[in-house]
Amino acid sequence: MAERLIEEILTALDEQTVVVPGTEAAAPIVPSLAGSLRAVLDQRKLLEKCIQELLDEHPLSKVLRSMPGIGARTCARVLIDVGAASAFPTAAHLASYAGLAPATRSSGPSIRGEQPSRRGNKQLKRAFFLAAFASLGDPASRAYYDKKIGQGKRHTQALLCLARRRVDVLFAMLRDGTFYESRPAKAVS
Image 1 (cartoon, rainbow, N blue to C red):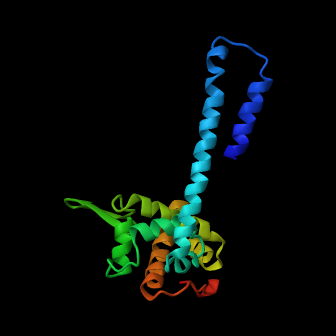
Image 2: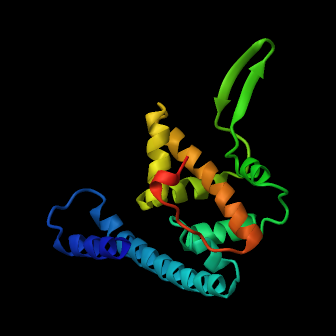
Image 3: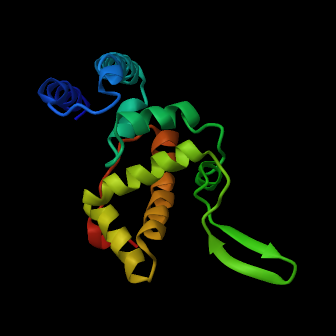
């Protein structure tokens, strides 16, 4: 889309017939900005290629990417922040680190129910959340999500529940070095 946008900007500049105050001043700036955008996109493609090569060399990359919804970016984020998960004694510790463990808010005698935590690694939480959203095409993930929706949770809450559940699976996969095994949708509890 960005490359198409660059071409559309340059084409629109060539076809421009209306002259407003400031057009002459902006004329050299817009093509320069489009060129800068093109250079940034080229750098991004090169960086993406380098990251992909590094991921292909990492032994846990194939394990992580076997899970539905986990692509190159999420895989890289998990490897950077979690590694082999050896620093976490349990999946609950990993979920807490990622900010996916529910938190009870209390102040004096007032105790509010379970709410999403505002703590933890925000980038990792976002990666798990987006991976959960991307995994909704997987029957087991969709069944769990639908179950949570059926329990009255809203979309975001159901996705956070799914992300938390997937952390458990991911932790076991990293701990044991095993690939993801999809379960039938009706076996999800």
